[in-house]
View 1 (cartoon, rainbow, N blue to C red):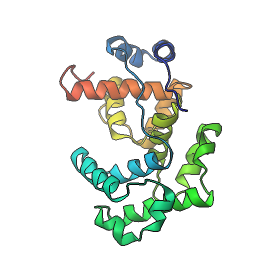
View 2: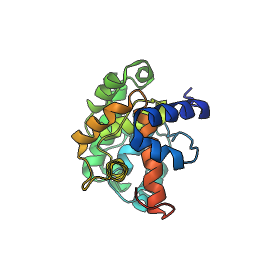
View 3: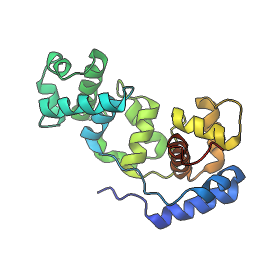
Amino acid sequence: MFVPPTAEAILQARRHLAAVDPALAALEAVTPPFAWRVGEGGFPGLVKMVVQQQVSVASAAAIWARVEAGLPEMTPEAVMGYGTDHLLSLGLSRPKARYVRAIAEAHLTGACDFAALPDLSDDDAVAALTAITGVGRWTAEVYLMFTQGRLDIFPGGDVALQEAMRWVDRADKRPNEKEAYRRAELWRPYRGVAAHLLWACYGAVKRREIAPF
């Protein structure tokens, strides 16, 4: 059973980040304690993440409610028991219906063993997930971070993280994905905690609780 990182583990990681990076030290000093983001794991969790990505929060919630109602048994067997038309009737786009079926097929054929993912390295786990049609690198990284508590996963393609990195580094433009990954190398082995710090910064700025750095 997944147990998220403890408050003490997160605190120790924050202290390490502050020690190795003055930019993050300034951010860490004003960021209150936070809990690790936790998401649903396994087959249902990955399906939910794919279904909800690239749409508004409200639309994501509405679509997922319809999917849950139309698939009361959220299992690979149940998904494969329905045709594409049924998935489309639940509000899924044709590509997302195809992706959901691809996830189910990967589970049933053993192409991706969800139970074995925790035993894989970060890179191997990402590779196993991105081998599934419709699962990109960002999806795989966020899934592993939120469902397995991996402290060194960093979704460099996340726009909110990139914007927070721009603020923290007082840069004129936000880094692209490649630049974000390169910048985050300094934060190993706690890039996941750095991501949480940056998300906390982004959220506080958007709520106007703090000014951009």
